[in-house]
Image (tube, rainbow, N blue to C red; front, side):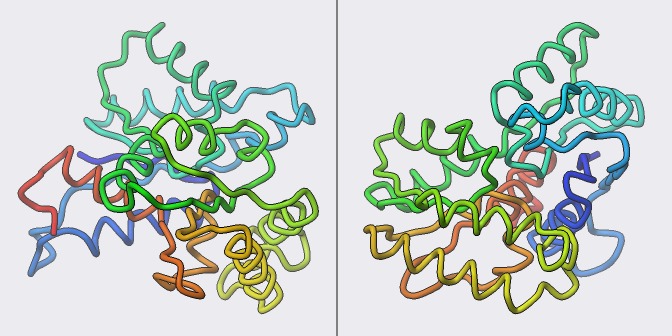
Length: 246
């Protein structure tokens, strides 16, 4: 069974489940794959708050406990649809916790899967990154992309703040208003991507699982948009039942 650690954020988990359905070869209900979406957002602290030093509770502990529960329920492969949760101060503790209790479940790494996808399809591209400030400050995408030989473009400090607000602002941000997202969010994100293009970006990675909710299109201003949610959805299908992947 495929597992999804939801709640980080809640609609990110739902989005990846939807994309698992979309990417599965099936012509009837019964031909779809078994999936368990475990969404307990109240148990997992904010990842960016922890990375920025505004919280002392590492979200890794709760994520590891949820992973154990998924394994006990029969899940064999799991994904965490939260980019920021893969930052080393969180993800390394998550791995240590699973090793401590000898868990056997296979965990797919969202960032590694995304970078591998880009290397296969866009090996020479200059990559623009949109993400939370926590992900940006951790160097999560930047470091892995540079290691693979990509050129990287990130928003200026001013634009990074505006992208982060588009995700987190309590009045208009995606986490507060997501069905639908506000026009202000889309305008801000489009402008941020235009700034990245001016700096030379050729493709954009949507490095926060809420961003595809606001930017469902495949491209913007001549740049392909890379959706880690869809990449992880496809990787989960392939890991569990490769013959079911479209």
